Length: 124
Picture (tube, rainbow, N blue to C red):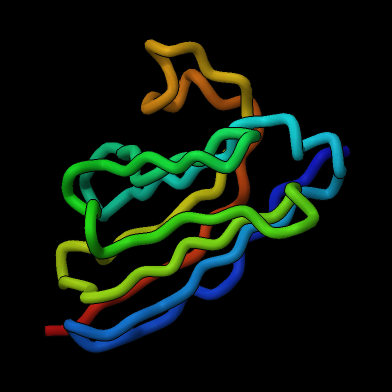
């Protein structure tokens, strides 16, 4: 069974940094778009960033300039470097993979595989 496993969450003070990792259980995920979504308490899950199979990233406006997404050499892994963290970044962060269309690439419906999530807490 295909699995996505996240790691790297934790508690950090505002202005600090964290690095999230996501590893897919199959190398075929190297051909998939991979992305991160997050869900804060009482809110809907929202798009954070995605990276194409070719390694081109794109970001939500709320994290642009602070977060950097990259793929590992194995291509079935990706890393989200989060700098200048703010309390509003507090959420459960989910790794996702799929083959979204141009319309669905920032929507949950565009992704077929999901990780279990990792908690990120930013204290003020």
